[in-house]
Image (tube, rainbow over all chains, first blue to last red; front, side, top):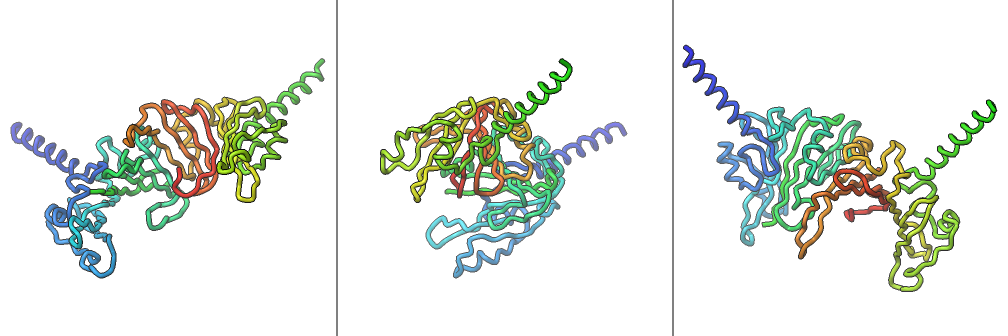
Length: 187
Length: 178
């Protein structure tokens, strides 16, 4: 009986560790879902065919498309962009991941509910940008208590031409309510 | 003698409040020294005649930085000759410990104190990058925090060393020039 308990404990601990890894937020992705992956690679990882309407439309210049999907049982919104590797031939590349799952955390434990000042202290050496409202490139959702905190890596901060990554936290009353990981590829 | 003490106390308090107002740091200036102020008003405030060495001498240059004393503190003032030929204050820089924001931020304040103090503002806190053959090299000690009320407009820039304020600048910031 003692041996079974020990085995069960090891099994449970291993599963928990693997699960945690699946939901680790980093600059370049969420668990095994990495920014820069092709649509085909994401489909293989999620074991699901993704329908991106804009990628089928080669007449209108719609370069981006989003899809709401499930990754390891959590809801995610993925943003894809056309990447032209040769003229007139493109593939859809993952450039954004958004989620509000409380399972997702950075390696140091930042996730849903984390306080604004804790994030700033944690990313002390990074470029931090704070804007009122839920800010996005397209529009800003204004509202009392809403703010957007972005952590930019050195490439995003200096726009030096290399691949740039930004981690965005959406805050309500100074606490994280959702997050988004963004990339700008220059290859 | 007893009557003299309250009088002295009131006098000292009034002087201290007036002094604080003189050095109050805000997004539009330091005390009465304001961004956008015409040169003639600036001269009146500083009680000095400013001799320009660039503007009005070099016809191409429209900006100039001067060093001056404002209420006993050292300041650097950027001047700008606008299209209507009026010269105005376009930037102020100081490292005086007398200057403080309404919330008491000044020389020695920390990064977290600044960010906590300006809730609801546009804040950009970033390390300073030097360029070595066009390659950015991040400073290990120097950083800046830019605080604006709106996306564009007047801003306070706090210059920090080891996350503590060492000087401030007040500048107008438009578009993506920050």
